[in-house]
Length: 100
Image (cartoon, rainbow, N blue to C red; front, side, top):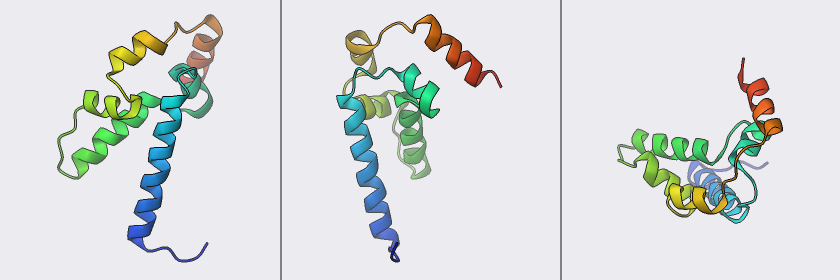
């Protein structure tokens, strides 16, 4: 990869983040527990990272505001529309992965 200046690197990373968020907003069939089990992070993790990054910059972005950014709607609305109860297999996988 050629030398990329800091401004361009930040722009590329921001574009990648926006694309990831757009993708996750489109893929409402993908449950957070599946993301956690397969990738080790979920929409809530992204929300926490977003809020933490804002705090690092001296900005006040609440966790709920960050979740609305990531989910594309208030979390409670997304949860009611798209979240399903985790099945026994998903729960067992989560416990296995996160019990360490």
